[in-house]
Length: 409
Picture 1 (cartoon, helix red, strand yellow):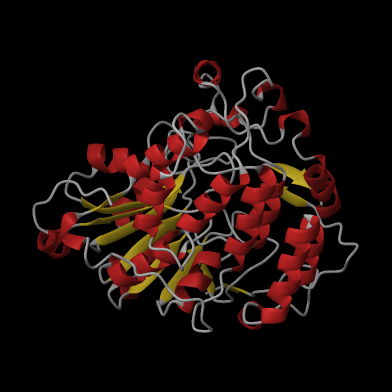
Picture 2: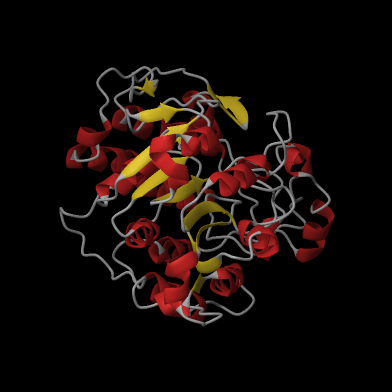
C-alpha cells in the first residue's frame, strides 16, 4: 500500500514534529509578520526555504512568494481588501457562479464597498478562536461590544446565529480556555492566519461579505503550506471528545495538517487521500493513497464502523476536476458504517465544499434524516470565507443526547 513522505519541497531540513516545537523559529516568523508584513520572509524562515525561493504555487491561481509579497505590499489598492459590500451590491454579485469567483472585474466597486473594520474589531475576532478564550463567551462579547450597524455587529450576529451545540452535549463540549503553557500544542497555521486578518483587514464573515467574488493571493500560499482551513483549539478538542478514544479517519486528508494537529491533541488518526492534488508541504508521512470509499470497504476497516469519519474541505466535484457534483460526500456517507461524522466546510452557499447549491447541514437534513446534529461551530475563516465544523451522530450515541432541538451558545 503506497504511502507518502512528509517533506517540504525545496527544504530538505524541514521536519514538522521538530519545527513546531521550535520556539525561536516561531518567534522569528512572527517578528517578520508583525513588524514588516513580510509573509515571504516568514514562510521561507519557518519552513527553512532558500531566501530566493521561486516555487510556483498552483491553487486558485499560480503565484510565487515574491509575487504574493508584492501584492501584500499593495495593501488596499485595486480593491484587494474590499471584503464587505453593501447589500444592493451583494444581490447583483450573487448571480456569479462559484467558478467565477476569481474574476477580478467582479470585485465590489469603491462606491459600494464598506469601510474596513478597525483594528480592535479585527483583534477581537481573532481572540474568539484563541485557546486562551472561552469561545462562546468571547463570541458573545464580540457582539455585545459591537457598534450598532457596524461590520463587527453583522459578523457577530452571523456567527452567533449559526453556532449550535446540542443540549445533550453542551456540558461535555464546553471547551475550557487553555493557559499559554508549554503543553499547549503549537498551531502555526493560526499564527499566519491571525496575521492575514490584520493585514487584509478582515474581521469575519457576514451577509456583507458573502458575495465576495474572489479571495486573495495569500491563500494559495496558506493552502500549500497548511491546508484549506484553519483548525481552532476548540474544534480540535471537540473532535477529540466526540472521537471518544476511537480512530478518526481523515478522508481527503490533503497535506495532512488537520491529521497532524489532531495527533498533537492525542487523537489517533488514519489519513487517507487519493493524491489528486499536489501540495508543497506534507505534515504526515503515513497517508494512505487510496479512494476513500474503497478504503472503507476493505475488510479490516469494516466500513469505518468503529471509527469517526472526518472530511475537511470535501471537494464538490462535477466541474473541471471531474466527477459528479456532490459525489465525494454522498459516496463516503453511503460507504460509512459508523455513527459519528465530522465535516469542516463552508456554512454559507458559496459552493466551495461538498455541494454547489447547499451547505452540509442542509444536505443532512434533506437526505440523511437518521443523523442528529451535535455541533456546528465556526472556525477561523480566511478573508472572504465562512467556515465551520459540523458533527453528526446516529444510533446509540445520538439517543444518549436526549430530545433537545436547539442550543445556541
